[in-house]
Image 1 (cartoon, helix red, strand yellow):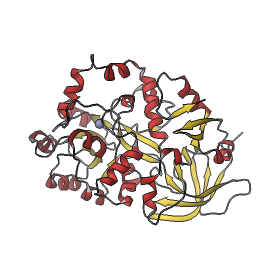
Image 2 (cartoon, protein in one colour; image 1 turned 180 degrees about the vertical axis):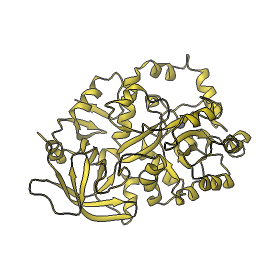
Image 3 (tube, helix red, strand yellow; image 1 turned 180 degrees about the horizontal axis):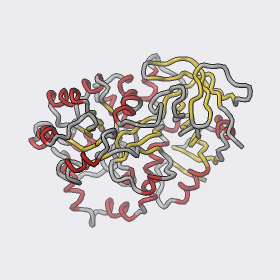
Image 4 (tube, helix red, strand yellow; image 1 turned 135 degrees about the vertical axis):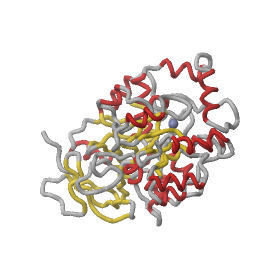
Length: 396
Ligand SMILES: [Zn+2]
């Protein structure tokens, strides 16, 4: 039997331009209409006065590295190269590295999916090869059309990597992941320019060591920056300057993996806010529509609540503060009322059981950070079978 059309009422629709009281009609995997009357057979869902936002976009993660603890071997680094060397030197000896490395790739990737989904992320840009489990039936939407290179000092040849990437896809590289006074971090940008690979589809990750003229040049060349302040603070005690990039719509936010980054994208948003550079609305754009544009996402409507767009949606409960964008910065993952991917509920509050029923999604109760939730049965069973678990999540 086909799933019923859902009609969310008593909600505030959140777009990058601001909030609007309204309703949303959801049919199949798409948003059928905004602020229109319900159809006769629609299943009416009471949004409880909550804020309906687009599913969040995490622009940078290494999905297989989220079962590791946050690790470093010096108080402060000046360049990420030193951190990577420290890690590699201990690959076979430090139990914090050898343990997770023995876990199956599939199970580690499942934790990566849960880390993101449970905090409202529905699209992730993974930085590494698109491993097989990511290509089919992975619980979170993963960006599939991209090119990447680790960095100038590691991974594939930069020029080859860039030219292998289709012109319409983003090409993503860790760059200037070190402090500005560090000569290496500072010169990396010029090296990209000289190699001819600083193009409109070039997306830099980190950019801690970028100088002000370099950031300006990045904007003028049409590229973008993925900001990971949590990881940067952990390794370097400082982060990139991102005000002008955000203003130009050229900034996305990424959590990075738990090996250096925050627990999840909600935690990352809090750290980003504490950095004091951007207003809540600019942070919202960096995890929604600006991220969708920078990553050149092909599915219509990702990062927006738009008619005809993909129904990747997240419902945040009230109270809605005077600046509604602040809500995303204070909410916890256990408070999130609903996470939907392509019109399918994956996790939600028990009061939203009708959403699972109307979409013919079998569900089971789970416990998230001490709060009862419903989870799609398929996802819960996969979780239960895995050899490694997402912290805070219990499947009965
Ligand atoms: Zn990274």
